[in-house]
Length: 414
Image (cartoon, rainbow, N blue to C red; front, top):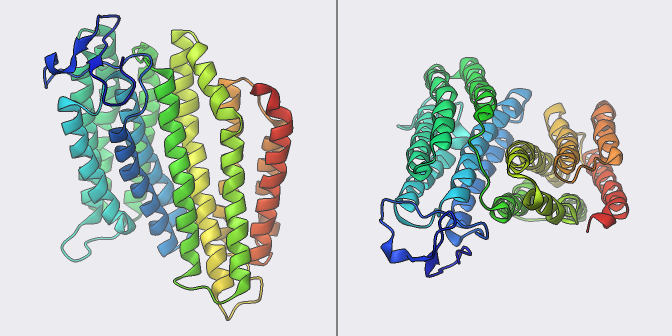
């Protein structure tokens, strides 16, 4: 049985077991319903997470309202690329044959894109044109994806129609993607936003063909859980970078402890006990509803969770930098508007995303989480005038209260 490890046999759609050696190198090996995440997929996810942490580095370099928006565009483009390969990996084994070879090419493209990510809106740093390299990397990612998925579709005519329908908006989006890379500046921001809008809107319309299927619910849920836990871990590294190379003030340790507590609350809100309940709901859903949950709750709403973590980490990084500054007050100077927005709005986005995810999977929406998210947004103008450490403390206390409320209200989901 195919379990995601080094098993000796692979299963097709109800076919008898056949030795892996009998499978052609060019013919993707179909996954079984019990398929789980492979070590190769974890490797792929680590490259993706490295790329999105470089987006945080890009925003932190010059934190403004513009860079917050530009970082969001980069995150959206990266997430859409990653999510596409999760669907592919749910249908066929990604650690074998032509699929593995193609994904290694994609990993190389994403790694190069990650390296130039901090210069995503800069024209030529030395001999490197970062925007063009990014555009080229995203094009490679999409071309390889469609090539591999069409091969994996085999005799499934409905899936092939779905892929061809999905290829229309993704091909159309390449024009603004390339044009934005060539023009740079405000044009790049606008055109890359248009490119994603075409991708998202067109893909949403194309999904009505109904060709997408989730073969292994456990695998699909596990991929999203694992990437989120990796992002949570990397967020601590990104936030800790604000303290510099050494710590000489005790207040920095207090700020770091508050940031750590905030990340623990984010972990708790998703993994205790929602993640397991959501996977169970996905597993027991009808094929049509399973596909909708996978598309809406995982492919779409999970982006809010990842983005919320990264923006909170960016805000915490700015808090640590503020309290590290020996010239600042003991609690750190108030954060700038962009930094305060990243901290409070990022937390609000995560809470709203968590509530939406619960509603789409286990059909339970926490009003407390939505209220807390709204309160953080409403109080943002006030929080902006607080010392940096006090603002982080307010966000952490809010998350702690929501986590405790969630624990008491959701225990019956276990």
